Amino acid sequence: MIDARLQLALGGGGLDLPEDGLIGVFRPPVDADLDGVDMDRCQILHDFKPFFSTWEDRGYAVAHAPIERFAATIVCLPRAKQEARSLIAQACAFSDGPVVVDGQKTDGIDSIFREMRGRVTVHGPISKAHGKLFWIDAPAADCFADWEAGPEQTDGGFWTAPGVFSADGVDLASALLVDALPDKLGKEVADLGAGWGFLSAHVLTRPEVTSVHMVEAGHMALECARHNVTDDRARFYWEDATTWQPPHRMDTVVMNPPFHTGRAAEPQIGQAFVAAAARILAPQGHLWMVANRHLPYEVELKKRFAHVEEMGGDARFKLFHATRPSRPRR
Image: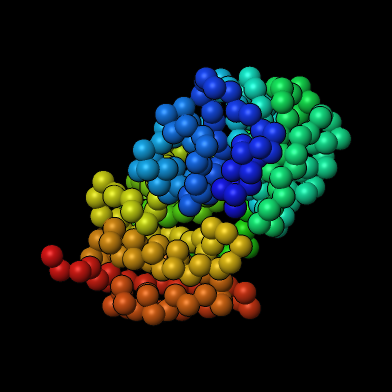
């Protein structure tokens, strides 16, 4: 965790943050303690809407991407290596002073440390709690410009980006769901956790669909979706799908919900998606859903819908069709 390592670095470990100017902190964990970084001078950079909102609720200035210069930057590494490199390149490009990099061993901090040390002078590292923190003194934008990455078109014709779910191509579970969808889906469809837009693109092949509401918590994923889904019937929402409030009830919800934010499976996320689908559907609405076969969604589905049917799948994934959503009485 960054807390202990940052305190050691600032408390005699050799790291001195500038006394004036804005400090940008890229992707800090939501439970991180940034003691030692003046809250009034701190801007959190997070493109995942639930984490963005959590930091905002704590009173921090928050943005999904940098828009101004920083006196110093701190990067908390994500798991995806190409995404981590891109964040470091971005932090260097926007910093006029030190660039601090922190991460866990399980997230590849050791290899990033070696790569950066091969290009510039690196100070530290501070090693503690199964991770490392190190820094470079001066802006080094040119040294890491080749690490910057954003949306780009794959061989399959879709736009994706590092760190976005299924960045290398079509997700097999989503493809399975697309093949199972009926010809008629109604007029108003919501795609919860829309990602880069694969499901929505296929839903929009139905001429009777008047709107597809694409709800996605990842800002970069939604930017990719804007490249992939250019139909005028698409509506884009950078929102937490579990709390999103639609403009009206939906005829259909399609979804391939996420099942983790860290390394371990978190079935409660998918269960929250099921509850959200029931909340936003019309009384005669339909849910079409795909999930990993080992995840326990049946109880939640039967709690939220009067009729639940498993539509098959394969050895890895299961498909569900649920109708007649139930909502708590007021």
